[in-house]
Image (cartoon, protein in one colour):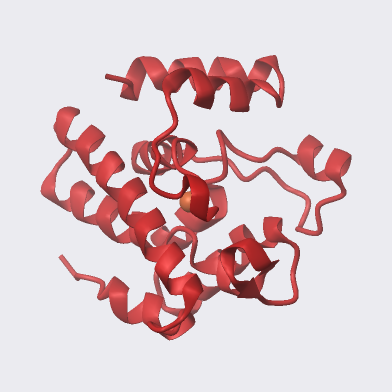
Length: 184
Ligand SMILES: [Fe+2]
């Protein structure tokens, strides 16, 4: 199994003395720890666990290129672009499977209709987690925010469900399906 030095990659895009780094690392650690706990409970293999560790730690790397002062990210792009930029960064690192996680990890997925309705500046297609590992990381990510006042607090199941519910009944169905698979 080829191990990825994910801290080396994170530090390439977030200087260790930056505020963005001090937000990025706790966020991805919390998401990764939750995802690994689910993976362990479901009896995933060592290889799957290692992948979840690496991809969880790298899933939001694209935020380095967006403009979001709350995250101390001062790139040029709108926030939603972090999924496409994350994919590009990880593909350039030769990590195609990890790149898929960066691209598909938002909520229960971003659909073509969301892109059209919100006029998102990303290529028109569905960005949906497909593999079990992708779904576990997306699920774990729903429970954690990156903005500092909420950075360390895991959302409750009710809060997370309510948030996803804002995007429609079809999203709630996916949320409930994942809750049955991954919830405690
Ligand atoms: Fe995230």
